[in-house]
Image 1 (cartoon, rainbow, N blue to C red):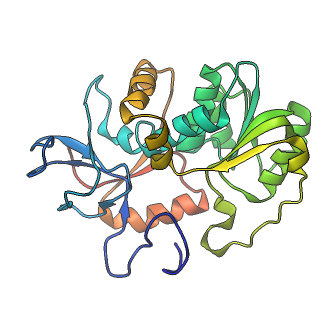
Image 2: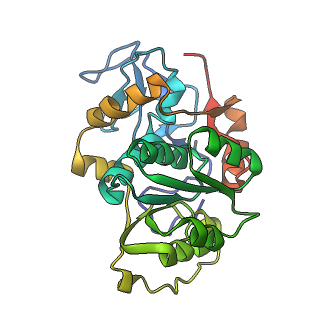
Image 3: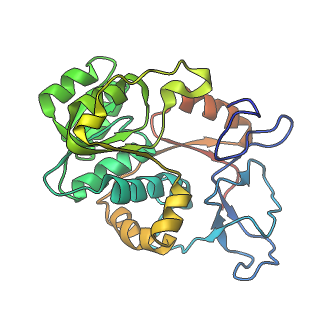
Length: 286
């Protein structure tokens, strides 16, 4: 949500036109090589309009979903879609986790944060994760997070002082939490800047006063599809993550809203943190 002249990596929503986002669709007709009627596709660049029927231009990048292991198609907008890829590529290539290290994940119960937390556990890290409700804290514990806490009841700085120091910070929020994490980092720590929800929609920027140059920290933001293009093909993600999901080693949960008329409510719920799982708008049965 922003003014049209605000700089960003993706075009703004246009008044009077359907919103665009990440979605899964069934192909009814295709004139594009490699895609045939009956295929299930996803648009990894977030170019799927929120409407019941779509005509996608040939230049729009889409991926054909290889349906197997009886996994629901909804996962391809969740743990096997953009959120999962964001977690996988960001952690693997920017976080560069090493067994025995400690990672702190903010917004740990969201679809990205929960996947980061579980991939980090798979890599042998101690995982600290924060979230905004006691219900979500219990979810974090259920997926194996070592230290799960409600940031509304416990100060981030206090928890990190007790459970840190940390080697990696996965930043989904920006603001004061970022400053606290910088202060808690070991030398040569890595900070993966994935989001800054505290400053979205015109929030007041929080100045960072921590002395991160002296800790020789690496702080890097990224866009998932750019990083994917730099380091590998989508197949590498599916080969590594899909089996973990199918076997239950990576757990997931989703909250499905029926009907396009719910789209606005869903976006608002996510921005306010009221959703309890990956929020998905179901347009039609597959």
